[in-house]
Length: 135
Image (cartoon, rainbow, N blue to C red; front, side):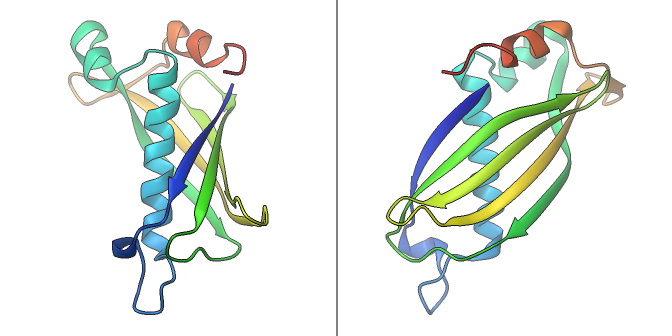
């Protein structure tokens, strides 16, 4: 499954020179993860309340390839990746719309925890939802 999330760089995301801070890319990744989950009807608070589990980030690997500037129009592509019994991966590609330059690539590993904050297997319904056709 894949989604595209539009992002417009605003002033507070940049440094004095108008360049986006590397830490903002991590925020974009988080926005992308939530947008992907929400696109298939998975809200973290509801998962916690109804199923007693929730996905959490275990690892993020980021390759910073170029930089974005104030008022750039960006697109964050979020795509599901490999999954195992206890972890799943999401792949992220951030591009500047104007020239299609890839600014960042990342892989995020997510795992599930239960209400006792212990690791849990990834529920089948979660994998099925994220394995749906592209939206």
